[in-house]
Image 1 (cartoon, rainbow, N blue to C red):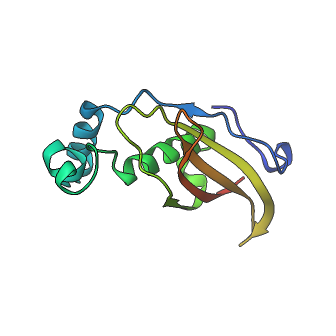
Image 2 (cartoon, rainbow, N blue to C red):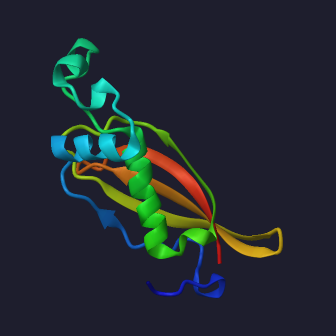
Image 3 (cartoon, rainbow, N blue to C red):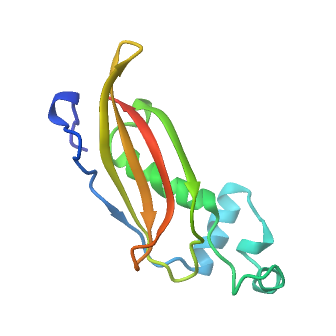
Length: 138
């Protein structure tokens, strides 16, 4: 991991993107087991269809985990000060997700030099699925 410093970063700089393999049933089952989130809409096709969805779809927190990986691939976890997102679209089976981040502000708070990042996941069609912000101490 390259050391990122406050002085080496400018507003508008982007984080190295992360692209994930297509969302699969196996991926959803593994995440359900790892997270303890066994909501049937994510792992049971019949249940998902009765709920009005065409099939199972990814857990929102799986997308958050991917965004967390984006951030911790850029800086150490101990440097994260805030991390939040909102879900703006469903991540369907087969979606190929890319996580991106852009520096939108540099500032000082609580004696630290920090940057605010705009982060998101998009599918292979460029449609945002999760959008949010993070604050990182540099």
